[in-house]
Length: 555
Image 1 (cartoon, one colour):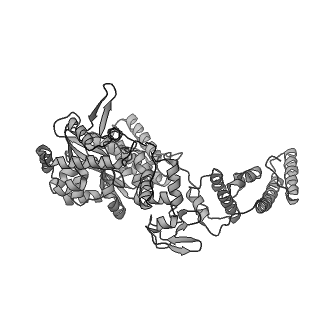
Image 2: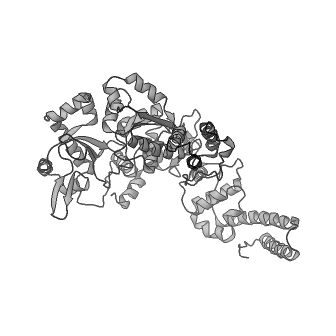
Image 3: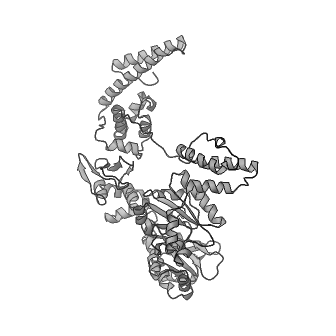
């Protein structure tokens, strides 16, 4: 783990203009810098970099953050990887909490990977298997395919190279049996496939048996650096093509990916022996590609594809599913030369939502009225995870699929149309920009010591147009896109003194309570006694405010 002190020291050295400017051509625009946004296609420059705030924000797509966040997004790296990338660029030495790790954590994995590679050519069984599957030598080199020998040989190699045994266990190359206190190799007599992080560092291995071990494939265990639910095999090879083509092909196996790349489908990746999960989604959102799931057509493949299609469609991804029937997989089709057929399949996947609905229908005996009713309820439950527009669109599709079975489209009723899978904070867009309210919010962001003074007299609900933004600003987190937009907007000026803030609050509250007084006078449903109470209350507040006295919400 990187120490917090060294993270803060590194950030103090960074300059947002220097960092972003090494990737994007920036032009001076007042106190800020501007450029076309590197994260979405545009002709006008809506991407703003603020040297004063040390943040960037795009008014077009809403992305924003600091120097580290920019490198994460642009280079497709996680937080520690971005820190290490920046540290390397600035010739800065990061500190780590485990002082025993004298060598960089990537070195042991890289050395073991190179050693596995050197052993492959001398193992005829392994090379024969790869040749039979149609893997070229160029692909073996590109993907770093190797061979892991017996356990003793691996342990001897690590010791002979004076590598840290504890780090080898921590990184998952070795295992440790606490009962008999013995160390053993995780990969024994297997073809190895190095697994990389997004920046290309080896963080784990996959291994395929060639001597009949019970498990055909095994992966490195979960470590602080290797989380198979967040990684995709060969993503570091595929990411540039993914962003250029705006499409990613997800398969089930290492060889599928290798053979697809060999055939020119260099935007192919694979999950690491696990189903697609929510943790994969941030990586899949990079560049907003269309997602094509290319899975086996057997029962296990269909089940996995159904879960993935539900997850992706409910999370707003576009794309579809391809199922390979007849026992073939993408690797087999490449090996037999069916490249054009594959290309046609990838061009025309079945749309996620249609695939899910068809699979749900296939699960039921629709000749049984009770089963038909259960099927419809199951399908409706799935549709409710989608946006209201998509619900209405595919309600018609579901009705048409059930229509031939005596089901009227009017019976497909969708209520409570909310997307329960979307739990992130969303700022509702508002066409009206109230400059006074925005000034108050910027004051809170830039001068948090004014917060107590503001909260004594004003609740966010009093604002007419930007109450949600004020609530977020009061929480002290400026990482929301709407707040970043306020911070970098040079037309919005914060209040610099307590006297100026007090004067503005008095003006705002006077107008607010005058409006409230008019509302009370116009209400006919309120009793005379209650109306009289509020009239006296609001008039008293207005009188104090006009005398230059701030009134609290409790007055």
